[in-house]
Amino acid sequence: MSIDWKKVAADYRDDYLEDLKHLIAIQSVRDDANKTEDAPLGPGPAKALQAFLKMAERDGFETTNLDNLAGFVEYGEGAETIAILAHVDVMPAGEGWATDPFTLTIKDGNAYGRGTSDDKGPALAAYYGLKILKDQGVKLNKKIRFILGTDEESNWTGMNHYFETQPEPTMGFSPDAEFPLINGEKGNVSFTLGVKGENSGDDTLKGFDAGLRENMVPRDATAIVETADNEALVAAFTEFLDQMPVVGDVKTDGDGVHLHVIGKAAHGMEPKNGINAGTYLAKFLSQFNFDGDAGHFLALLGGALHEDSRVTKLGLAFTDDIMGDLTMNVGVMDFQAGQGGKIVLNFRYPKGIGSDDLQGALTKVAEENQFDLQKGREMVPHYVAPDDPIVTTLMATYRELTGEQAAEPEVVGGGTYGRLMKRGVAFGALFPHTEDTMHQVDEFQPVNDLLLAMAIYGRSIQALSNDLAD
Image (cartoon, rainbow, N blue to C red; front, side, top):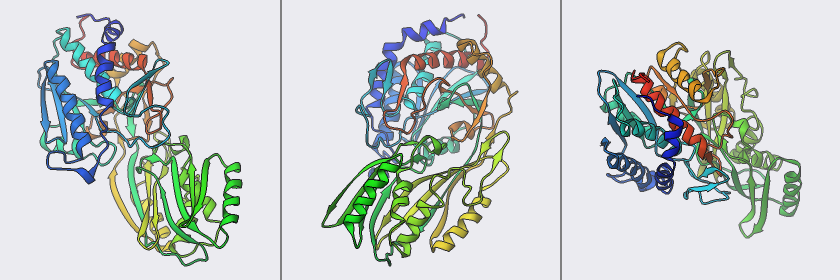
């Protein structure tokens, strides 16, 4: 059956945006503090999963909810299964939005809201691609499973639960990255440097806080300090702000001097796209007379870890010809006097270097600063050959509907559900011409981009299921 994909996608515009509005309104940030037996990752992710599955049931699909951790929509028949892996959870919104992050706002042709780009907007576009095929009565020769996870932005508990309880698909894609196609993803591992929280210098660091998640460049950083000359510190901070690519404010009360730095949030896979407020604040404070754990904490953050996403200062710089640079994001920084704290570093590493190399260098750093070191969850590098049918078919569809005949697959530092399958890739929905606002304030996607993605996804599902008759 021949389908004018761009025209049909445009016809679904209003319905799509209404469904997206409903999904954006759900604050589906993982919330372990309020988890229950029925909402094991907090109320928001469970509610978003239920809402998505309810939409699919409304449209006549068969759905399955796996303990409010994951779920799937199923359509078509066949011995092989094509998987579409998306997620309904979102990053914390953070401060500084021009619009309400949980109200879908259409402005100048763009859809604003947390999740419009990562991943509710793309997920819904892929779902609508499948819905169009169903509505048009297109026969699919392979089974399609549209699978939804609920904590992609943390440790993938939901999608891991799916793969532990369900058969592995034949191949598939995740609409959770960028076009034209990602056939390689770097390894991903985090390390935590634990701090005891002691002060032994003339100046006192009472508290320091920056970062919401390890895979997000911190936009905001705050600290409370007490020094021998608070007025001099305030004056120096004002001068510092004038010289650096950050803004901020300062006030003094009975607790001491309260400092606030504002940088720029960005996805942790490429820290250069952001401005790390935490390391800038530490850089400023490290010039004063802090000692003990506080001094080591500030000196490390403001020195070896500041503005060094390629980890040259720690001697870990590495580049692979296919996968590119090793990168490091200083994602979470916390210090509470007398209680302790931590520094969480997130690494995206190419093939050719491993987490053991990283751990060796960080062990030395921990020993020098009298910190503890703990390794977190790790995902090794993932790569699908460019000539695999999952790559060639999706690339052909992308070129067909965009006219970009020179487009080629690429490798990135981000981690998507695509890596959970041997023949899994990431496929859209961010176009090369569109600004990447994932994990940032004022996250958006152009509405026309989302509709074009819908058309590409629908045509791709049709092609992958081998129903190519026009």
